[in-house]
Image (cartoon, rainbow, N blue to C red; front, side):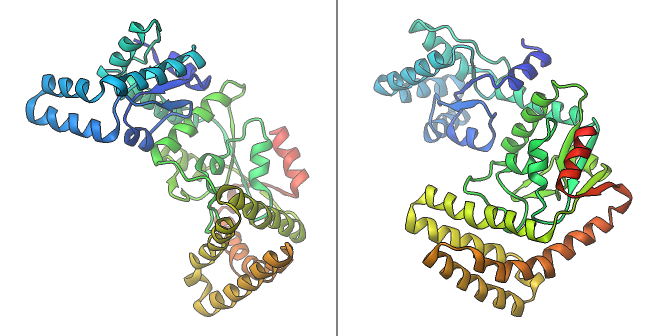
Length: 360
Protein backbone atom coordinates (compact mmCIF):
# COMPACT_ATOMS: atom_id res chain seq x y z
CA UNK A 1 0.00 0.00 0.00
CA UNK A 2 1.35 3.41 -0.95
CA UNK A 3 1.90 5.79 1.93
CA UNK A 4 0.67 9.38 1.91
CA UNK A 5 4.13 10.90 1.16
CA UNK A 6 4.40 8.69 -1.94
CA UNK A 7 0.97 9.75 -3.16
CA UNK A 8 1.80 13.42 -2.52
CA UNK A 9 5.01 13.09 -4.50
CA UNK A 10 3.14 11.35 -7.30
CA UNK A 11 0.62 14.21 -7.53
CA UNK A 12 3.25 16.94 -7.27
CA UNK A 13 5.23 15.36 -10.12
CA UNK A 14 2.20 15.28 -12.46
CA UNK A 15 2.67 11.54 -12.73
CA UNK A 16 0.41 10.32 -15.57
CA UNK A 17 -2.69 8.42 -14.49
CA UNK A 18 -4.73 6.18 -16.76
CA UNK A 19 -8.12 6.62 -15.11
CA UNK A 20 -10.38 3.71 -16.08
CA UNK A 21 -13.52 4.99 -14.35
CA UNK A 22 -16.61 5.77 -16.45
CA UNK A 23 -16.68 9.18 -18.19
CA UNK A 24 -19.36 10.54 -15.85
CA UNK A 25 -17.21 9.73 -12.81
CA UNK A 26 -14.15 11.33 -14.40
CA UNK A 27 -16.05 14.46 -15.40
CA UNK A 28 -17.29 15.06 -11.87
CA UNK A 29 -13.96 14.56 -10.13
CA UNK A 30 -10.50 13.95 -11.57
CA UNK A 31 -6.82 14.64 -11.01
CA UNK A 32 -4.94 17.10 -13.25
CA UNK A 33 -2.56 14.57 -14.82
CA UNK A 34 -5.23 11.92 -15.45
CA UNK A 35 -6.33 10.60 -18.84
CA UNK A 36 -9.75 8.98 -18.97
CA UNK A 37 -9.70 5.64 -20.81
CA UNK A 38 -12.67 3.84 -19.26
CA UNK A 39 -13.11 0.14 -18.84
CA UNK A 40 -16.87 0.70 -19.19
CA UNK A 41 -18.81 3.58 -20.68
CA UNK A 42 -21.58 5.25 -18.70
CA UNK A 43 -24.43 3.11 -20.01
CA UNK A 44 -22.39 -0.07 -19.56
CA UNK A 45 -21.51 0.87 -15.99
CA UNK A 46 -25.17 1.68 -15.26
CA UNK A 47 -26.29 -1.71 -16.56
CA UNK A 48 -23.69 -3.52 -14.47
CA UNK A 49 -24.68 -1.52 -11.40
CA UNK A 50 -28.35 -2.40 -11.86
CA UNK A 51 -27.48 -6.07 -12.23
CA UNK A 52 -25.31 -5.93 -9.11
CA UNK A 53 -28.23 -4.60 -7.05
CA UNK A 54 -30.72 -7.09 -8.43
CA UNK A 55 -28.67 -10.26 -8.90
CA UNK A 56 -25.40 -9.82 -7.02
CA UNK A 57 -21.70 -9.44 -7.73
CA UNK A 58 -21.17 -12.58 -9.81
CA UNK A 59 -23.96 -11.75 -12.28
CA UNK A 60 -22.71 -8.15 -12.54
CA UNK A 61 -19.17 -9.32 -13.31
CA UNK A 62 -20.41 -11.68 -16.01
CA UNK A 63 -22.44 -8.89 -17.61
CA UNK A 64 -19.43 -6.60 -17.54
CA UNK A 65 -17.32 -9.15 -19.38
CA UNK A 66 -20.07 -9.63 -21.98
CA UNK A 67 -20.41 -5.88 -22.55
CA UNK A 68 -16.65 -5.37 -22.88
CA UNK A 69 -15.73 -8.24 -25.19
CA UNK A 70 -14.70 -8.90 -28.76
CA UNK A 71 -13.84 -5.82 -30.82
CA UNK A 72 -14.84 -3.47 -28.00
CA UNK A 73 -12.38 -5.11 -25.64
CA UNK A 74 -9.63 -5.17 -28.28
CA UNK A 75 -10.06 -1.44 -29.00
CA UNK A 76 -9.92 -0.52 -25.34
CA UNK A 77 -6.87 -2.67 -24.70
CA UNK A 78 -5.15 -1.01 -27.66
CA UNK A 79 -5.91 2.38 -26.13
CA UNK A 80 -4.46 1.38 -22.75
CA UNK A 81 -1.35 -0.10 -24.36
CA UNK A 82 -0.76 3.08 -26.34
CA UNK A 83 -1.21 5.26 -23.23
CA UNK A 84 1.07 3.01 -21.17
CA UNK A 85 3.80 3.15 -23.81
CA UNK A 86 3.56 6.95 -24.01
CA UNK A 87 3.69 7.25 -20.19
CA UNK A 88 5.72 4.29 -18.91
CA UNK A 89 6.15 6.02 -15.52
CA UNK A 90 2.37 6.23 -14.99
CA UNK A 91 -0.24 4.31 -13.00
CA UNK A 92 -3.68 2.80 -13.49
CA UNK A 93 -6.45 4.23 -11.38
CA UNK A 94 -10.10 3.36 -10.77
CA UNK A 95 -12.49 4.50 -8.05
CA UNK A 96 -11.02 2.52 -5.14
CA UNK A 97 -8.24 0.43 -6.65
CA UNK A 98 -10.65 -2.45 -7.02
CA UNK A 99 -11.89 -4.67 -9.80
CA UNK A 100 -11.74 -2.24 -12.69
CA UNK A 101 -8.07 -1.30 -12.40
CA UNK A 102 -7.14 -4.91 -11.60
CA UNK A 103 -9.01 -6.16 -14.68
CA UNK A 104 -7.27 -3.60 -16.91
CA UNK A 105 -3.93 -4.44 -15.33
CA UNK A 106 -4.50 -8.15 -16.02
CA UNK A 107 -5.53 -7.56 -19.63
CA UNK A 108 -2.42 -5.42 -20.17
CA UNK A 109 -0.26 -8.13 -18.62
CA UNK A 110 -1.79 -10.69 -20.99
CA UNK A 111 -0.63 -8.42 -23.81
CA UNK A 112 2.92 -8.15 -22.49
CA UNK A 113 2.58 -4.83 -20.67
CA UNK A 114 3.31 -4.56 -16.95
CA UNK A 115 1.72 -1.43 -15.48
CA UNK A 116 1.22 -0.54 -11.82
CA UNK A 117 -1.99 0.67 -10.22
CA UNK A 118 -2.83 3.05 -7.41
CA UNK A 119 -3.86 1.10 -4.29
CA UNK A 120 -7.03 2.74 -3.03
CA UNK A 121 -7.57 4.33 -6.43
CA UNK A 122 -8.94 7.80 -7.00
CA UNK A 123 -10.47 7.85 -3.52
CA UNK A 124 -7.01 7.56 -1.94
CA UNK A 125 -5.62 10.33 -4.16
CA UNK A 126 -8.58 12.56 -3.40
CA UNK A 127 -8.12 12.06 0.33
CA UNK A 128 -4.43 12.94 0.08
CA UNK A 129 -5.26 16.05 -1.97
CA UNK A 130 -7.78 17.32 0.59
CA UNK A 131 -5.42 16.65 3.49
CA UNK A 132 -2.58 18.42 1.69
CA UNK A 133 -4.70 21.52 1.08
CA UNK A 134 -5.85 21.61 4.71
CA UNK A 135 -2.24 21.42 5.89
CA UNK A 136 -0.54 23.68 3.35
CA UNK A 137 -2.92 26.64 3.62
CA UNK A 138 -1.87 27.01 7.26
CA UNK A 139 1.41 28.53 6.05
CA UNK A 140 1.68 32.35 5.74
CA UNK A 141 -0.53 33.97 3.11
CA UNK A 142 -0.55 37.46 1.65
CA UNK A 143 -3.37 38.68 -0.60
CA UNK A 144 -3.03 41.02 -3.57
CA UNK A 145 -5.95 43.43 -3.72
CA UNK A 146 -6.98 46.43 -5.77
CA UNK A 147 -9.70 47.67 -8.08
CA UNK A 148 -10.45 45.95 -11.39
CA UNK A 149 -7.70 46.40 -13.96
CA UNK A 150 -4.81 46.79 -11.53
CA UNK A 151 -3.10 43.61 -12.71
CA UNK A 152 -3.60 41.63 -9.50
CA UNK A 153 -3.66 38.28 -11.28
CA UNK A 154 -0.42 39.04 -13.09
CA UNK A 155 1.32 39.86 -9.79
CA UNK A 156 0.23 36.45 -8.48
CA UNK A 157 1.37 34.65 -11.64
CA UNK A 158 4.73 36.42 -11.62
CA UNK A 159 5.53 35.46 -8.02
CA UNK A 160 7.39 32.22 -7.32
CA UNK A 161 4.88 31.37 -4.58
CA UNK A 162 1.80 32.66 -6.35
CA UNK A 163 -1.24 30.40 -6.67
CA UNK A 164 -3.51 31.61 -9.47
CA UNK A 165 -6.94 30.70 -8.13
CA UNK A 166 -8.72 32.26 -11.09
CA UNK A 167 -6.56 30.35 -13.54
CA UNK A 168 -7.31 27.11 -11.71
CA UNK A 169 -11.03 27.95 -11.74
CA UNK A 170 -11.08 29.02 -15.42
CA UNK A 171 -12.89 32.18 -14.33
CA UNK A 172 -11.87 35.75 -13.50
CA UNK A 173 -14.21 36.05 -10.57
CA UNK A 174 -16.58 38.81 -11.74
CA UNK A 175 -19.77 39.01 -13.78
CA UNK A 176 -17.46 39.29 -16.82
CA UNK A 177 -15.26 36.49 -15.53
CA UNK A 178 -16.16 33.71 -17.95
CA UNK A 179 -13.38 32.34 -20.15
CA UNK A 180 -13.58 30.15 -23.24
CA UNK A 181 -12.59 27.16 -21.09
CA UNK A 182 -15.44 25.53 -19.19
CA UNK A 183 -15.12 25.51 -15.42
CA UNK A 184 -14.25 22.28 -13.65
CA UNK A 185 -16.64 20.51 -11.35
CA UNK A 186 -15.94 21.50 -7.75
CA UNK A 187 -13.94 18.42 -6.75
CA UNK A 188 -11.72 18.69 -9.82
CA UNK A 189 -11.07 22.37 -9.07
CA UNK A 190 -10.06 21.40 -5.52
CA UNK A 191 -7.75 18.70 -6.89
CA UNK A 192 -6.05 21.20 -9.21
CA UNK A 193 -5.60 23.56 -6.26
CA UNK A 194 -4.08 20.81 -4.12
CA UNK A 195 -1.60 19.83 -6.83
CA UNK A 196 -0.60 23.47 -7.38
CA UNK A 197 0.05 23.83 -3.64
CA UNK A 198 2.02 20.57 -3.49
CA UNK A 199 4.25 21.64 -6.38
CA UNK A 200 5.13 25.01 -4.88
CA UNK A 201 5.43 23.64 -1.34
CA UNK A 202 8.70 22.09 -2.48
CA UNK A 203 10.24 25.59 -2.27
CA UNK A 204 11.33 26.89 1.10
CA UNK A 205 10.02 28.80 2.92
CA UNK A 206 6.45 27.67 2.27
CA UNK A 207 4.19 30.71 1.89
CA UNK A 208 1.51 31.81 -0.53
CA UNK A 209 0.68 34.84 -2.65
CA UNK A 210 -2.99 34.82 -3.62
CA UNK A 211 -5.40 37.26 -5.20
CA UNK A 212 -7.95 38.79 -2.85
CA UNK A 213 -11.00 36.73 -3.91
CA UNK A 214 -14.53 36.30 -2.72
CA UNK A 215 -15.81 32.92 -1.61
CA UNK A 216 -16.96 32.08 -5.15
CA UNK A 217 -14.94 32.15 -8.37
CA UNK A 218 -17.67 31.65 -10.91
CA UNK A 219 -19.28 28.30 -10.10
CA UNK A 220 -16.35 27.12 -7.97
CA UNK A 221 -16.06 27.95 -4.29
CA UNK A 222 -12.92 28.11 -2.22
CA UNK A 223 -12.32 25.23 0.19
CA UNK A 224 -13.45 26.27 3.66
CA UNK A 225 -9.97 25.86 5.14
CA UNK A 226 -8.55 28.30 2.58
CA UNK A 227 -11.42 30.76 2.88
CA UNK A 228 -10.93 31.00 6.64
CA UNK A 229 -7.19 31.62 6.26
CA UNK A 230 -7.77 34.30 3.62
CA UNK A 231 -10.19 36.11 5.93
CA UNK A 232 -7.34 36.93 8.33
CA UNK A 233 -4.50 37.30 5.80
CA UNK A 234 -2.65 40.61 5.26
CA UNK A 235 -3.45 42.51 2.05
CA UNK A 236 -1.24 44.52 -0.31
CA UNK A 237 -3.18 46.91 -2.53
CA UNK A 238 -2.23 47.77 -6.11
CA UNK A 239 -3.12 51.34 -7.12
CA UNK A 240 -2.21 51.95 -10.76
CA UNK A 241 -3.31 54.99 -12.81
CA UNK A 242 -6.84 54.78 -14.20
CA UNK A 243 -5.60 55.01 -17.80
CA UNK A 244 -3.29 52.03 -17.32
CA UNK A 245 -6.15 50.04 -15.83
CA UNK A 246 -8.31 50.81 -18.85
CA UNK A 247 -5.63 49.57 -21.24
CA UNK A 248 -5.31 46.32 -19.30
CA UNK A 249 -9.07 45.82 -19.39
CA UNK A 250 -9.17 46.62 -23.11
CA UNK A 251 -6.59 43.92 -23.77
CA UNK A 252 -8.14 41.33 -21.44
CA UNK A 253 -11.87 41.70 -22.04
CA UNK A 254 -12.14 43.04 -25.60
CA UNK A 255 -9.02 42.23 -27.63
CA UNK A 256 -8.21 38.85 -26.09
CA UNK A 257 -11.75 37.62 -25.52
CA UNK A 258 -12.92 38.46 -29.07
CA UNK A 259 -9.85 36.59 -30.36
CA UNK A 260 -10.38 33.61 -28.05
CA UNK A 261 -14.05 33.22 -28.97
CA UNK A 262 -13.26 33.46 -32.69
CA UNK A 263 -10.49 30.86 -32.34
CA UNK A 264 -12.78 28.52 -30.42
CA UNK A 265 -15.98 28.86 -32.45
CA UNK A 266 -15.09 30.35 -35.83
CA UNK A 267 -15.72 33.84 -37.18
CA UNK A 268 -19.52 34.12 -37.09
CA UNK A 269 -20.38 32.02 -34.06
CA UNK A 270 -17.31 33.34 -32.23
CA UNK A 271 -18.45 36.92 -32.65
CA UNK A 272 -21.92 36.02 -31.39
CA UNK A 273 -20.44 34.21 -28.37
CA UNK A 274 -18.24 37.25 -27.62
CA UNK A 275 -21.22 39.60 -27.90
CA UNK A 276 -23.34 37.34 -25.68
CA UNK A 277 -20.52 37.16 -23.14
CA UNK A 278 -20.38 40.97 -22.74
CA UNK A 279 -24.16 41.31 -22.66
CA UNK A 280 -24.45 38.58 -20.03
CA UNK A 281 -21.84 40.32 -17.88
CA UNK A 282 -23.92 43.50 -17.80
CA UNK A 283 -27.19 41.63 -17.40
CA UNK A 284 -25.88 39.79 -14.33
CA UNK A 285 -25.52 43.09 -12.42
CA UNK A 286 -28.56 44.90 -13.84
CA UNK A 287 -30.36 45.20 -10.50
CA UNK A 288 -27.34 46.69 -8.81
CA UNK A 289 -26.92 49.18 -11.64
CA UNK A 290 -30.61 50.04 -11.71
CA UNK A 291 -32.69 49.07 -14.72
CA UNK A 292 -32.51 52.50 -16.38
CA UNK A 293 -28.72 52.69 -16.10
CA UNK A 294 -28.46 49.08 -17.25
CA UNK A 295 -30.48 49.95 -20.38
CA UNK A 296 -28.26 53.00 -21.06
CA UNK A 297 -25.02 51.03 -20.72
CA UNK A 298 -26.42 48.19 -22.85
CA UNK A 299 -27.19 50.67 -25.64
CA UNK A 300 -23.60 51.94 -25.45
CA UNK A 301 -22.32 48.36 -25.48
CA UNK A 302 -24.32 47.65 -28.66
CA UNK A 303 -22.81 50.71 -30.36
CA UNK A 304 -19.31 49.67 -29.24
CA UNK A 305 -19.76 46.17 -30.61
CA UNK A 306 -20.97 47.56 -33.94
CA UNK A 307 -17.92 49.82 -34.09
CA UNK A 308 -15.53 47.00 -33.21
CA UNK A 309 -17.00 44.73 -35.85
CA UNK A 310 -16.91 47.43 -38.50
CA UNK A 311 -13.39 48.77 -38.04
CA UNK A 312 -11.71 46.52 -35.44
CA UNK A 313 -11.32 49.35 -32.91
CA UNK A 314 -12.21 48.72 -29.27
CA UNK A 315 -12.13 52.42 -28.28
CA UNK A 316 -15.91 52.73 -28.17
CA UNK A 317 -16.13 50.18 -25.36
CA UNK A 318 -14.77 52.83 -22.98
CA UNK A 319 -18.11 54.65 -23.33
CA UNK A 320 -19.75 52.02 -21.13
CA UNK A 321 -16.72 50.57 -19.34
CA UNK A 322 -15.61 53.86 -17.74
CA UNK A 323 -18.97 54.60 -16.10
CA UNK A 324 -19.26 50.95 -15.07
CA UNK A 325 -15.95 51.21 -13.23
CA UNK A 326 -16.64 54.64 -11.73
CA UNK A 327 -20.22 53.98 -10.67
CA UNK A 328 -20.17 50.31 -9.75
CA UNK A 329 -16.94 48.30 -9.58
CA UNK A 330 -14.60 50.84 -7.99
CA UNK A 331 -17.03 51.96 -5.23
CA UNK A 332 -17.88 48.31 -4.49
CA UNK A 333 -14.26 47.25 -4.16
CA UNK A 334 -13.25 50.32 -2.16
CA UNK A 335 -16.07 49.54 0.25
CA UNK A 336 -14.81 45.97 0.58
CA UNK A 337 -11.28 47.25 1.21
CA UNK A 338 -12.50 49.63 3.91
CA UNK A 339 -13.79 46.63 5.82
CA UNK A 340 -10.28 45.14 5.62
CA UNK A 341 -8.44 48.36 6.50
CA UNK A 342 -6.68 46.85 9.51
CA UNK A 343 -5.28 44.04 7.32
CA UNK A 344 -3.74 46.32 4.65
CA UNK A 345 0.05 46.24 5.05
CA UNK A 346 1.13 48.06 1.88
CA UNK A 347 -0.25 50.24 -0.92
CA UNK A 348 1.57 51.18 -4.10
CA UNK A 349 1.64 51.10 -7.87
CA UNK A 350 2.45 47.94 -9.80
CA UNK A 351 6.26 48.07 -9.62
CA UNK A 352 6.16 49.04 -5.94
CA UNK A 353 3.86 46.14 -5.08
CA UNK A 354 6.02 43.74 -7.12
CA UNK A 355 9.08 44.88 -5.15
CA UNK A 356 7.22 44.48 -1.84
CA UNK A 357 6.11 40.95 -2.74
CA UNK A 358 9.63 40.02 -3.87
CA UNK A 359 10.99 41.05 -0.48
CA UNK A 360 8.22 39.37 1.54
